[in-house]
Figure 1 (cartoon, rainbow, N blue to C red):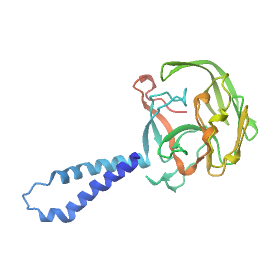
Figure 2 (figure 1 turned 90 degrees about the horizontal axis):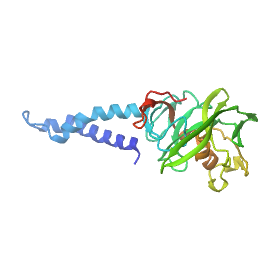
Figure 3 (figure 1 turned 120 degrees about the vertical axis):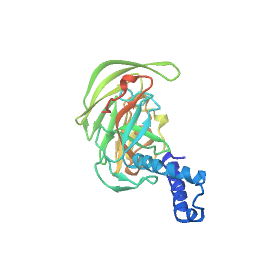
Amino acid sequence: MDFALIMFSLLLATGGIWLLDKFALRAKRAAEAVEPWWVEYAKSFFPVILAVFLLRSFLVEPFKIPSGSMIPTLQVGDFILVNKFTYGVRLPIINQKIVALNDPKRGDVMVFHYPENPSVDYIKRVVGLPGDTVIYRNKKIWINGVEQAQQHDGDYNYVESGLNFVHTERYNEDLGGHAHPILVNPEMPSVHLGSVAEFSQIENCRYSVVEVSCKVPDGHYFMMGDNRDNSRDSRYWGFVPDKMIVGKAFFIWMNFGDLKRIGLSIN
């Protein structure tokens, strides 16, 4: 069950008990009678649950990075904070935007509900904005016909789950003025055609053995992981609609396996 829905249910339950006691049960108790334990607990927990619910719904929400698809920017085990209001104020549970603020920018690291399973949250980098034509060819990105600059920054090796040693090459990529690191494996294809799903508006994309080209629909975004050859992203499952946006990742507050990462900002 969705955590926000659990919190909302607890909020309704504790708040309902508190109101029931205030307007009905209290008057029926003798003046010297002790409050029932369930009333006392509800009154104690209600303000705490309310504060946590409002904080997570409208300000910031914590997430844990479960996979290596955003290495080297984010490592497995990073605990991050996500700004919930930078892209607009949304109603909890239904995620309906009620106040429009900023639009996602190319290069933002964004958390969103996974289009194939909205109960799961994903984190990727915004590569294509509404109306953009995005081409990924030979490990390089073209946006609206303009090649995005890359600069080689040496080798990068890491160990993934199962103690598998992975060798890649690190590049510094510039998405229209937003610089960030990426990893590529020259021996891997730009896209695994057998992994491409039948997603909504797939007609906006063209696939070949060497590239993928997509026209981003209005109100949608094209997302990619920084670990390009170890990321299942918009190349495979399509576009992220605005209604599925959760927020912008901005801060690493804990990593129990690497304490030096605490306090790093997310670029």
